[in-house]
Image (cartoon, rainbow, N blue to C red; front, top):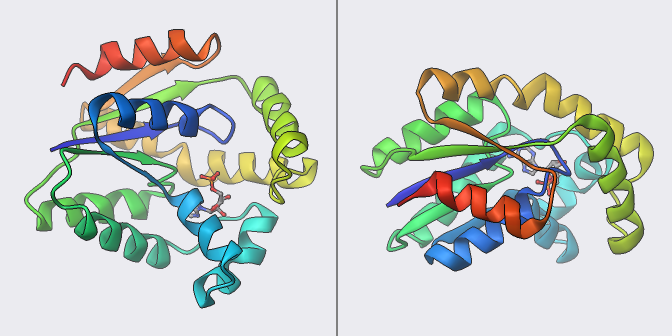
Length: 188
Ligand code: AMP
């Protein structure tokens, strides 16, 4: 099983590239943001619980995310691979993911990070808010999402560097060129 993390700040293009990778290799794409947004749109008990947190750009609790991740993993145990998009986002989530994979006789294969400068990220997120009307893409929320990324998620870079799993791809350019660079780094 190829267990890939597409890593990077909000607006780096993780979702777009994760979908393309999962289609090319036949792997299961898991976007925790999409899973949570589906819960919110169905107004499920979980959705009601997380809506205000998501709308403010804060992170939903590690406990909830780990629970969601394990249940999706178990449901898709026959998959040839996973493309994780938006998870893990904290050191605790990363450690729990390692433990969870180990419990299922698996381990992480690769972490591919998309590198995009802050100015470009804000520009892209503002465009996305106009185009898709995402409640969590207003200017203040965008700033908070980036703060949360630097505070909680960026430290994962050294965690994965130490494990020799981390590789970077420059995330500005055409979707196709970036995709080709990601594919070259994957070599399954
Ligand atoms: P995303 O679409 O990945 O940017 O996620 C949208 C929002 O969902 C985030 O701003 C968080 O509020 C929440 N979220 C998604 N994934 C996670 C995660 N792994 N840990 C905590 N919160 C998350």
